[in-house]
Image 1: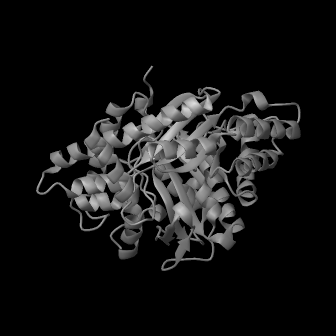
Image 2: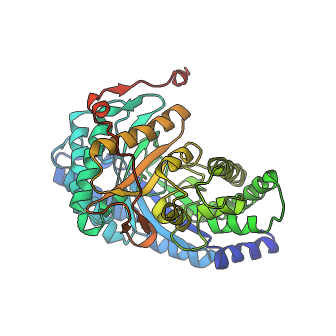
Image 3: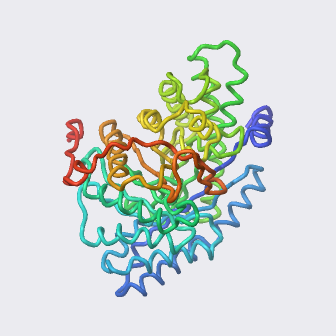
Length: 450
């Protein structure tokens, strides 16, 4: 690294909110399955606390050595629905074992209370999905995800209908804290196996026994870089974003390599997603406004976001041989002060956010809606987002929070990196008849690629 690059990195850290958002240690639990639920839960707890014992200390050591903030230390595990399939009525024991391990390790979140049901599901997986509200209510660091669709399999509408009910129940059970349980639950289409970001992280079945995945983030760095371009056209803007993403990703690559050495783990991927925070100066929306929008949500927003996402990926791919996860630009409303302001002033709507998800990383994320929104409407929203993912062969997701007891004009507060959000208006016309039909929406024609 040249001396000017060192000074640039120091500037990014000190004044532009650059950080390594997470080191996530993925751990396989297949060798933990025992004859009973209690024995399996104990084996899971023992393996996680053993394999991740040095995770927090390692992250802090690397942070000191490199001078780079590492915000979150996380663990992801093999999908719970697979590990506890022999014990379909006792999933809550696994949920509590995972949460207990997270507390013991001092990590921020543990992901993998998950199921992959994109085509259909077993009775055990149905039981798992029904356990999610209780699991998220009786734990504090556990995160859950369910993959309900894929380009290859189509869209499992029966699972989507169930998830509408699950989200509503989770919102009610955690109503004393603005239904925060829903902030730890995401519904995917085309979920990836190496995502380091919560709430959707799980350790995929094709992964090794112990893998390090690192997520970097730097919306503020990108915005500051664009501020220096006076009068440049959009080609110049895209080039500057690409160069900046390269610098950010190189730091993530270095952190990942050091973490692997310390933890005795495989190098998984670097996820170069621009993940915002509620802090001023750390916003994806403000990048879009720097490109030339009066306010995020204005006409041109989707085009600007598409350019941003593409340039970030191109820059990152040059910086590391192992780019993965979600990689791109996130648009979580409650975690981005620019998005929050866009909702509040009326420039940004749920419909515009949905259009934006066709070109960004993931999807409708951390959006607070009225608590009296019907489960079928939430299911319809999930189905729409899944369709965008399936047809475009990309990962999409919904993390929506029907805040119990609140409506348009109110604000939900989640705290920390989860931020706060004004309640967003949602279309109230019914889709109940469609959702009640169930079945599976077939995979698109282009899924047949053998």
